[in-house]
Amino acid sequence: MKEKVQDKKALVLKATLELISEQGFCGTPVSQIAKKANVAVGTIYLYFPTKEDLINTLYIDIKTHLAQYIFKNYSESTPTRESFLILLRNIADYFIGRPTEFLFIEQYSNSPLITADTRNGGIEIFAEVSSLFKKAGEENLIKELPTAMLINIATGAILSIVKLCLFGNVKVDKPTLNTGLEAIWDAIKR
Image (cartoon, rainbow, N blue to C red; front, side, top):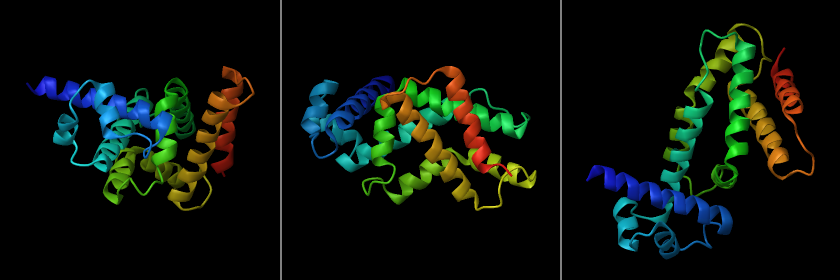
């Protein structure tokens, strides 16, 4: 029974992601999500009391999958610079391979629809990234700036590179992408 519930929830989340990425939050009624997921509207409200709850759950779901992906070949024993490049490469690979998730995260990361609790939950999922920045600071490898500022500099840069790869009129091959990732490191290093 629990497996069926998870399957239905997964179908609802997938349908929501696809529709909201195409049509936006306001342009996507719950009835349309139910139809695409092949479930009853009441089923959606059984799992998600409001459409906003559905969005917040989807946000955390994507952040969780992203974290699992980016940390897949990460080790605390790897040298710091190399660790940064691994994480940046994994972020780029994840979003380039999942443009719908990228569009959703871009649209909703700073949206008032995402609650403070959800936003904080998304940050907690990436606590290991903060630890890496702190480690780099302790090793005197990065600029003396607040960790949050350094994370935003790196995040903004990697998301801009992903946008270029997905939607730009420039073909970004693997060597160029790797050089771009190194440029992000260069922006925050001492």
